[in-house]
Length: 87
Image 1 (cartoon, rainbow, N blue to C red):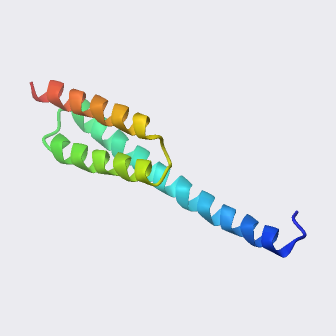
Image 2 (cartoon, rainbow, N blue to C red):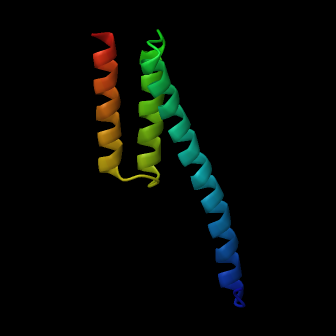
């Protein structure tokens, strides 16, 4: 355990940030999984779920939760799956 006051405060901040980041990352993964399930089940709302998942991936990338290249790769793969499903 830290003894110095600033280190104690920083430890508390790190815990809060970790919880917030974990929640946002989990939310992103959930929206992506909903989109994947909709495409697999040939649902009509796959396009709007793609939009939500793409937005969630962009948001996670902008906050530094995932790298920019991973965000681009994920969005590209989702777009390809959506196009294939609509074809």
